Length: 355
Ligand code: X2X
Image 1 (cartoon, rainbow, N blue to C red):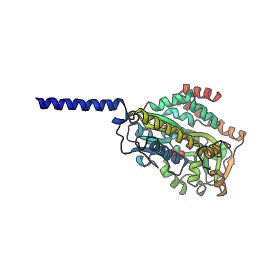
Image 2 (cartoon, helix red, strand yellow):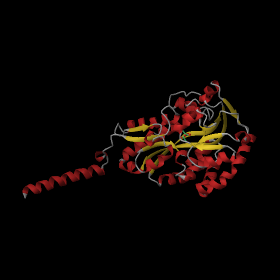
Image 3 (cartoon, rainbow, N blue to C red):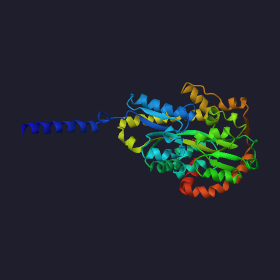
Image 4 (cartoon, rainbow, N blue to C red):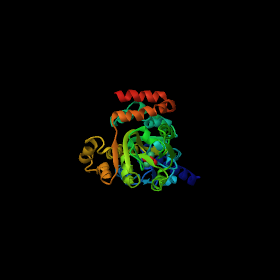
């Protein structure tokens, strides 16, 4: 009997220690040996650099307690980049730095960023992300079970092809393009009289190489890292959509972290995203991002487009009148897609851009 009482007492004492540790955080926190992170591209892309930076900063700011490992090239998804939202939401993957396009079949409001010629500048993008519409989109995004931590940026997507210089919608007719993700891209390319196939990035470069498609659309960093000029001679800067990246973490994983760890991870995400966005915008927003990279982060980025031109890529810029011809052709896409995105979000975004 005495013996039993002693066991009971020590069990009780243990319980008190455990719950005290829970109350005070840290002590009870048993991190996993590794937290996985989904990243669609490789480590050399601005996007991949930003993802690695986040993982490094998390390690630093948590004193090595949280170890996040980026899995590049969608390797945890067998290359199926459009499955990332589901995989992170259901907890098969813990962390993510990935594109809104790749989630836009599931998160319909992400298609706001895919509306053609909707956001005329980086300032417009920033205003949406910081505004009411951004808040509404984040809420929609988080509903499925992912905590949103920061906006990164793949960038304004430009069009390249192997056949001819594109200056007018007429030049697009009959060309076959590779795109990915949301069916809004099928609608856009069809409206321009082109053919389009949706295809993962994992298969895309082979498709360029083999001429299965005549062209594609992607931002600066993606185009220059894959040396697009080896497959496509012509690039037209049409700035038709900007593809933001999301820094996020599975909600249950997030809730498993004590407050100090959450704070460290959140700060790391914002810092890595700020750095990553500057890389994505370098030389495309005047001096702004280049200066930030030099003064705040101590690096001088390469001027990727100038290098690409030196390699023989023919880069075409369009006048406002030339751009208008593309916009006019793509207007019907709004009729179909604004209701899917949500009229309230669309209207809030118009307001945000005015502020
Ligand atoms: O697949 C693409 O085109 C890429 C790399 O830009 C995305 O992941 C959306």
